[in-house]
Image (cartoon, rainbow, N blue to C red):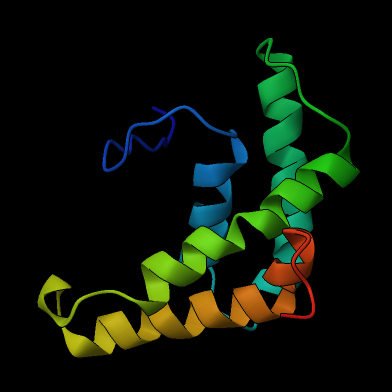
Length: 114
């Protein structure tokens, strides 16, 4: 009765923010994402903590979210044309590139100035 997401595309150990950040970036349009993502991250963190998951403070969550933009950029902006309609690929690229720029992903990764 409750919506959920099951994503088995890539299976690896990593930060819990990986999929959450990808869902936020790919699920919201460029105009709405900046106003909604902090609220969505806080809601996720509260729900995860309520179910026994140890969560860092919001500053650490936000930094991890920013760092995940490198995956969004590579996955969204470098999608092979065989993956689907060009319009959908281009739309995914636009939101991923905007998110990477908005979050200064290189700075978040500690490699600013390259």
